[in-house]
Image 1 (cartoon, rainbow, N blue to C red):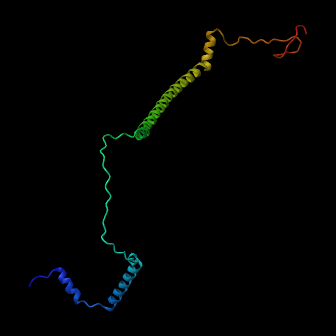
Image 2 (image 1 turned 90 degrees about the horizontal axis):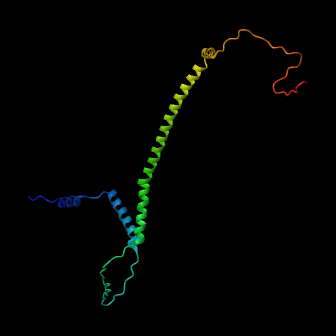
Image 3 (image 1 turned 60 degrees about the vertical axis):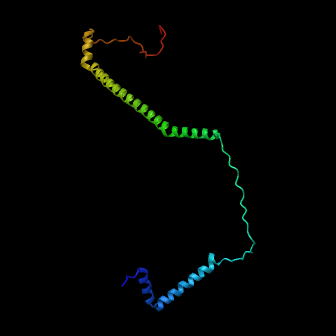
Length: 177
């Protein structure tokens, strides 16, 4: 017995099927939808019969004559515009970051120099403060006074004024009055 093809087997199986009432209702609903779609969509356009023309002759226009161009002149405006655009892109993409990096490096160098100067000035200030402290100590001042021949007073004398008023500093006095 020859083996049936799949299509023959499916046709035989579908032929033996009897549709249920639900399947018949569903098929009727689908058929109604298809009919309304055909009527209300593109297929429902009015068909106007065209008059029958006798022996239609197609007239084809003659193609234009082709010319061989020996040279093509360059569009200088477009070339210049392209070069300017490329220059602007080069400036924005390459030169600007280099300039920013250079400026940042210069600022970092200046900050480093100022920090070193501040450190040196702080060390100088500390050394000068230590020197001031050493020079202004009471023991050192007494030693310098002794070296210069100054010393503690041996006796204390008071000057007495002969009856008159004491004149304060800054007052003008006239001789004899």
